[in-house]
Length: 232
Image 1 (tube, rainbow, N blue to C red):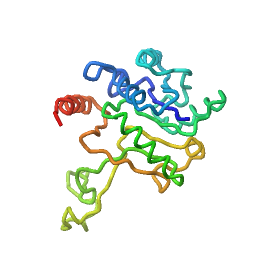
Image 2: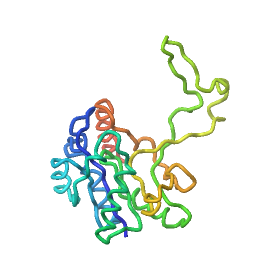
Image 3: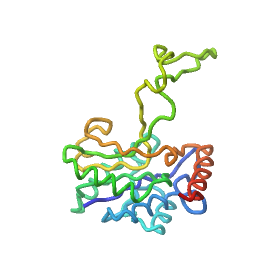
Image 4: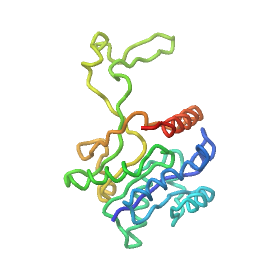
């Protein structure tokens, strides 16, 4: 049994009503709900929210909102793991503890049904692994990163790599912020995500875009339109 869980709290400050704001004509949360439905992986698609407007939109898009998220995991400091564990404990009380749960971010319009299904297949094929989640490669070598000091100077974090060719530097990856598949017991037992317990599902960079600011939002909408206008 597999459950989709979409964390979507209210109270976004940088982008008001972020989780239900119209993204190219429809609420952004609808993209994650539709991808979950089209994947065919889930017995239930649950949205965890503390906000009645988000709940109404989520239900209209085909998800369930069977509980109200408690206030203590609906503030700026609540983590996705907190939300997952709350949902799993709620499901356990209902006698519906799933073998797998997948946290899908509410602001992930580039997430595809095929990606969800393929990631679950990878996880099922390797009994030693506990998680599978989307990652992408940093577009520039992180070894060449630098900071600007309070007085305006530039300082490299790793000056020893200044003369190293880019192709000789080890590739680095980051979490794509789209989905996190996991075995339910791994989440409940606090098995670390960024560890040998996880399988990386590498996504192309053009399908990865954090949406944390209005600038991100504008870029993501433009990128989405561009991708969907291509004939491949």
